[in-house]
Length: 126
Image (cartoon, rainbow, N blue to C red; front, side):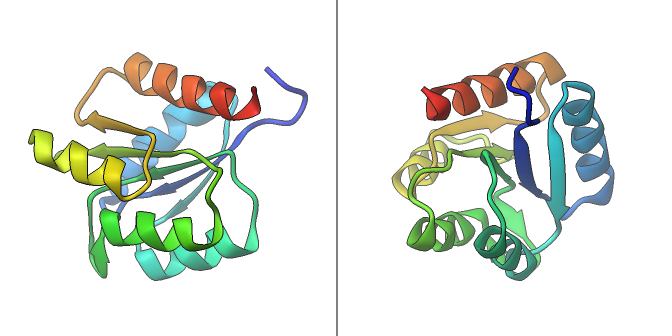
């Protein structure tokens, strides 16, 4: 792991899920910033540097697909991973078409989430 902790922006509107995932990622030595809305996430993403964006599909002010496209307007390099309960193949396809590099259906094992986060961050650094 690099000297600086990788920094993740996690956007999830359910507080319990957000806190659990944040805790799991912090235990794996990631810095985590969280947001519960698209508007706040866009502000954070445009003002800070992140090593990964972790997005939910459904947010109170729009969809994760909308957020993904907005992020891609100003950041084309940072990996985006959807972590969503939307379990249809079309959901995954739409996420990838909107600019995401990965899609994981929740709930999943914490180790599976962390392994995919690590892989995407390492691929970006390579």
